[in-house]
Structure formats: structure tokens, C-alpha cells
Image 1 (cartoon, rainbow, N blue to C red):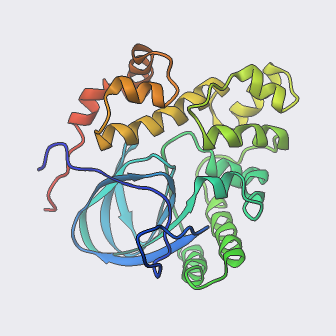
Image 2 (image 1 turned 90 degrees about the horizontal axis):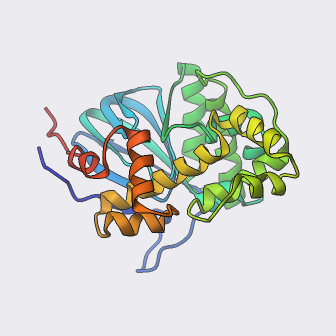
Length: 288
């Protein structure tokens, strides 16, 4: 067991065949690989969808741990830390895309206008876990295998089809349709959670009353607007805490919390421990 392991923050997306020192931007990246050794704890600032095609492992995030076997799908929000251990011949696909592409790019905008996909992408937890039937898994693997060599617009289309397949098998009920203006109002919160957002300002942007906006936000995310903002800020803070290069006070301000004490209260309320206790509990266990 290694205490306080070094944590890698993957920032930005690079196509597998790109070369040179400067990252090459990519709308969607999909790669596969076999793993028999633990994958250390890490976080990243883009979305990641992991699909297990073969073998098994134990996958862990701040939401908890569970088995990762054929048909398992884990959708990870930006800022979520995760790791795997007890890997036994695990072959998985990782499909990644940047925050800005999902929130704002024209090609992927339909994902946030479809109530079913909005439920998938705005789930309240840091990670969403779904187990797919064999027939659906095979269709998802077809989409994943087509992404690496496809043109950008085809990659985005394949990603939408992939997300749609998974959304159909969510364990939670599908959200009812919400006004498109509510979806648009939440997009900048996803992209820049540290901004000084107010519920009144977001409701005004959606051209709804505060009460109506709050009801729609709860219907879509299971959270109040203020809780949604705080959760997005906490997710970003967790990534910075894991990197360990800045003080807790600095991280609080960077992530949009007005005072370190307020950040500490929000963190304890959400995760059940102080920041220091949470960091101390983040250890990597050797594969047994």
C-alpha cells in the first residue's frame, strides 16, 4: 500500500497518432487496451466513458468501488478521480471528449437537448455505472471501434449513438422534458463552475422565474441549482487536492468558494470528511 500516491491530471485530449510536444486537439478519442496490473489513481479535465469488453477488475471513484466486468460501463465527469485494481485480463475501451465539445460544440449539442441524454450527462454523482446486456454491448463496441480513424463529424455522431445506447439502459427513471433554455443555462456552469453564478442570474438567462427554474433543475439533475453549482465546484476541487500543488485555501478560491471555511463545510457535508482526511484515505492497494 502506498500512502498519498502521486496523482496524474490528464489535461486536454491528444489523438493517439499525434507527435510533437504540443497537444493536438481532438473532439473525441477512443482507445482500447489490456490491463493485468493496477491503474493508479488519476483525474482529468475531460469526460471519459469506460466500457469493459473482457476480463475483470475493481473500479473505484469518490462515489465508491465496484466490479468492472464485461458489459460494465462507467461514465466519469471531468474532475473525477478513479483507479482500478485486481485486474485480471481486463480489456476495456476508453472514450474521451472535452467539456467544451459536450457543452457547446454544435455537433454534440443535441445530446443536451434530448431529455434522456441530459439525464445521463447531468447525473448527480461523479461517476455513473451501467451494466449493458450483451446485445447492447456489441452495438456499443461497434461504435467505439469506428471512432479512432473516423473524421471529426463522424466521431461526434458515433459518440451520440453510443451515449444513446447507454442512456436507454439507465437504472434511474428518464427525466421528463425540460425547457431547452434550462439546458442552455446550465451549460456554462458545467464549463466554468468557479464563476460567480447566482440562481437568479441563471433563471433570468433561462427566462423563467426562480421557482420554475429550480423545479426544472431538480427534475433534470436531482439537485437544486445552488447544489448543482456547488457539486461542480467540489469536483474541480477534488482534482486539485489530489494533485497537491496548492494549499486548501488557494484551491477554495480557485474553485469559486468565497471562504476556505465555507469550502470545508461544503466538502464535509458532501463527502463526510475533512479535505485532509479524504486525501489521507486516498491510497493505492497492491493487486492481490
